[in-house]
Image (cartoon, rainbow, N blue to C red; front, side, top):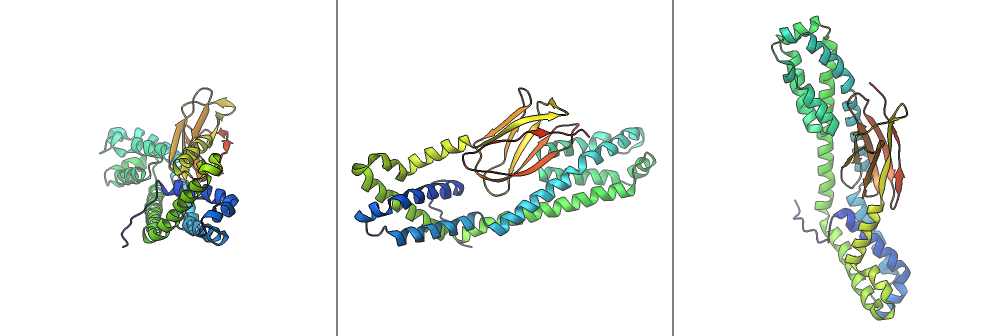
Length: 316
C-alpha cells in the first residue's frame, strides 16, 4: 500500500474547487504571466487542465459514484419499508405482552425507529437483528402467531435485514475503493496541487505591481475565503406540509451521493427548513416524522444555487 502524503492545503473537495478557480484565472492571464515566466504558456495550461480532469476522476470516479448512488437509494428503499410493518407487529406484541417471554421494550422497536429517524444504518441493522431474534424465540413466536404474526412477516423482516447488511457492506467496500484511488494516486494529486501553487506564486509576482486587484485571484487564502463565502450562499430550503398544513420539528437530512458531508436540520417557524453551506453535487434529501411516511428524493445542487424545495408528507 502506498504511503499517503497528500500535500494539499485542505480537504480534497476544496482542493479541486480552488484549483478550478486558479485555472479559470490563468486561462485569462496565461499570456501576461507567460511574458515574464516562460514556463507558463498555453501548453502548460492545457496540461494543467488535463491534470485537473484526472484528479477530478480520482476524487469523484463516475463509475463508483453511480454505484454508490444506487446503493444509497437501495438502502433507504429497504429502510422505508420498515415503519408500516413495525406498526402492525408492535400492536401484536402489545396484545400478547402478558404471555411473552420477552418484555415488549426489549424487542428493540424504539431503537429501530430512532435509528430510522436518524438514518443510522449500522444501528438499524443491529436493532433489526435483535428484533428478529426476539420474534423467532421459540417461546415468543407461538404467542405472537396467535395474535396475527405470520412466518411470512418474519421472513420479510429477515429479508430486509439481509438486504440492508449486504448493501451497507457493499457501500463500505465502495467507499474504501474510492479512498484507495486517492491513496494509490496521491503523487498525481500532489503534482497537480504543486502546479496550482506554482501558478499562484507566478501570478502574484506579475500582478503585485502591474494590477494589484488581480493578486487575490492567485492567493490561496483569499480564494479559500471566497470559496467559503460562495458555499454559504449554496443552500437548500423550503416548507414542509401535510395536506396543506405546515409541519414543524420534521427531521431533514441531506445525504451526499458524490462529495460533501451529511447535513441535517429541523423544520420550524411555519414548517420552514434550511440547510446552508452545501457543497455542489448530487444528494438524497429525506424528511422523517413519526406518524408519516419517510420522504426521500434525489437531487443535484449547483454552485451558488439557493435551491427551493418544498416537501409534502403523507400520513401512514
